[in-house]
Image (cartoon, rainbow, N blue to C red; front, top):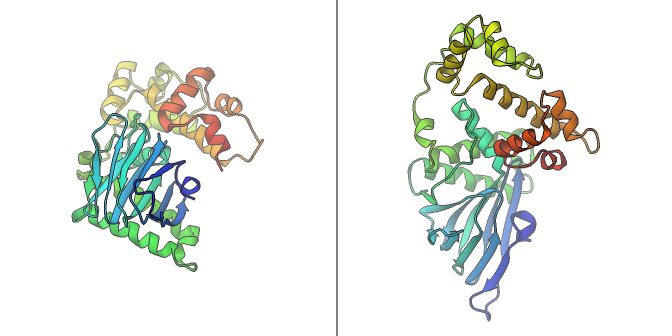
Length: 305
């Protein structure tokens, strides 16, 4: 039951005579799987690498857990536990009677949501701190949102069974977590938005890339489109876009490939066909860039339900 909803997990009773008393209510909201989980006895749970971001918010009791070679952490009703996609995961003690809200979050979707909020590419996994305060402030607001989602799941006629409601809630859960939890981008997200001024030459180059990313642009051609020198364009992109013109072109192409792969039906197309169509001529390099950006291979995206 737990393995189908979240992860394949090996469970050991710490007091063998007790009944496990398992409880699970769960729903999938696109990139987020959210549920309420409880056990009636002390347990040890081993899940290996999760492959997803994960958050546990105890409603009662506590869990003691660790990932990889990290220190043992404790999640309580006042402090949520945050798990990374990598690192073998062990809950050394699930306290008898502990009930918690569990969220499994698809890696690529959280990272893409962060990039959308920042307005720029990140290009690396988000390294969360092991926990954050859910007793006050943004953490408390986010935990209340999660609780409301779980309560609605438990109602057979709840609105979360309607995609028009579940899709915005998924966005709120992702954005709320990024604003409430501790990670290297939190301060940047909390700043007032900077003016979105970009010089006209930079805008001309951006428009050219967005309108025809499959075109074999190089920096010299983009500089000609922008009507500036190559050096000026490179510096303009560095200051106003946060990356080089060719890095921006690559990211746009990767996003177009991903969108097409996610829309494709079974057997409709191949990864190579889509990559070539969007301007990637070296498939090995493309596959590496794709995995670094989205945390999965193009084939995994194509095969996802």
